[in-house]
Image 1 (spheres, rainbow, N blue to C red):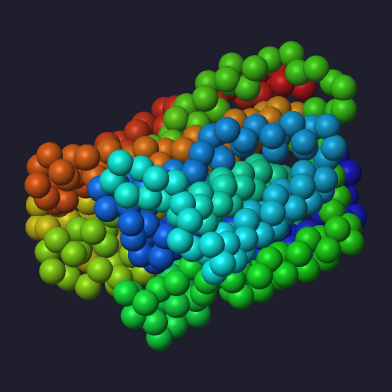
Image 2 (image 1 turned 180 degrees about the vertical axis):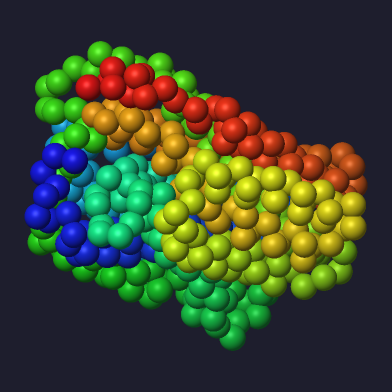
Length: 422
């Protein structure tokens, strides 16, 4: 890589980007975990559409991925990685301030809202949705920056897929502890019926201060630019990133991957409630399994990403089939161990050989994360039709088979095609 000689072994950029990736995972899960409490705090008067309105929190979050992921690639090409990173952090701070404003508005104007046929929607909730959109936008751009940078920034004794899996493990740690932060810090000791949006004021202000401090440290950090992974300012790219078959199919694979990953993460609790099991523990074990799997995968430097993806998708499909026919949620949540390596493998295989197209490809790639908003809703629709969640998990089996196809055939790329990118 250009401009990566004597500084290639410095751990500082790797560590700060890993911590920011932790924040992304933490805030992504916080956003989802707040659906239940905010349903009580903001939507008490929206009787007829309460569940639909509640899911808008996740929808607006992932909408930020769909609409704004490509901004990251554009900023990297025009201004470099560090500038794009700083802008994304500023957007995250703005999103947190909108969350803060939402709870503050509820404290003083909690009774005001928009009238709908089945009740009313508090204005504070609409402010929160705008914050969710900004948070999703920030998370998308941060991943557009961090994924290719981590893959290309050489750290002695590691390979790209190994580094990506390490930061993903830290990201999973954030997703694992976030539910406990919501229940043990934000709403500690409060009965569900007594939940108030005003309780979010202090936690979100403290998180905003933490992110601001991280941004200030990052601003002073020497973050070497990786010229060979992006186009130079003013340089026109001769080809569309979609012309690279292995990348285009990788974007499809990540759409199905995120859809399957999020479907289990957000819907397994609903299945647990259906069969009278503990609704909180399954999701915690699932995300915790992903964290453990990513930690272990960080040591698999000798195994290629294609082999890792092949083994993990086959294993996941078999586990899900056993879980479906036995109606056993504990087997289902063990799929988290398999899902743990898939993101890093698919991303590494997708951007192989793209060189100056890498940053733009990363922006387009992140748009596929919108699968996380599509498949859980589709699964819920099937659960309503079938009257049970048990057979809906076959949707995730389809996702595994799409990724298996990518591992075996879709990710193959001729080296001659990569050389033509120069």
